[in-house]
Length: 157
Length: 102
Image (tube, rainbow over all chains, first blue to last red; front, side):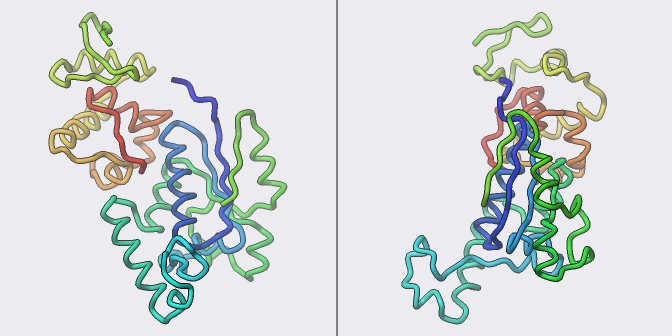
């Protein structure tokens, strides 16, 4: 059946594992359905495409009511690392790739990966800090131009 | 649903996936591919055989599995089966539509 969604643009602004994976899974899922997809990494979302940081993303244990632990406990040393380890274990069981491999899959699948120019400047990042698979550094105007297509949807994560 | 592909009567789901793999033959695979606008080559068949093997082993199919297959890389996979590669290749292979989200 022909789909009416032709293109999905994701804006990833956060670096917590659950948000990064939400963007990756949906962007990959779009490609698997024959839908074009692109991700615009901005603000903390940029951590997901920084060579040195992408394998060290964490689950938020503070200010996250879905953790079902008191906020005070969530702030204890080691809590974040523990929760992250548990989540990664569950992900591996479901054959979900680690961040670096997922980015490779996305790029090979034809998903476009963009870094936000303003955020790159704000965090004083250089091109060599970012993964090689990135398609470029864009202004928000450039990014909107990429949305200039019928049946294109934008999603802010 | 009963349909005719390449002169053979086959039973499929509403999406066009064979409900009984024992009905599958290479001619039917070729016919299903044609309906998807795909002309089968040796590489296509190699991928189809890989998928059928995985199905026999009861291994869930995913794009990561394709990456690790050693049969084909993801870029070529998308090029061989454009517009939803895993969906189309499994349909041609006569095996069920993958249920995985990845």
